[in-house]
Amino acid sequence: MFDELGVLKTYDSPLAVLNAYYPTRLAMYDKRKKYLDGMLDAEARKLSNQARFILEKIEGKIVVGK
Image (cartoon, rainbow, N blue to C red; front, side, top):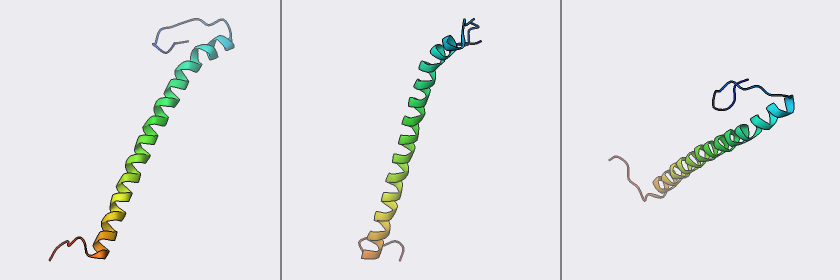
């Protein structure tokens, strides 16, 4: 099998494969979670700003157009 660096490697047992694979997969899960957290945070900030704009438009604090 190929390891995380793309080098062909022979493993003695399925447990050895899991032991080699686990740290790499765990790091990728962590990286994916951080990315998704960032995307959700950006989306939340965008929606918050949109809501704030709408409320200020309704209250007359912002005049858009003539």
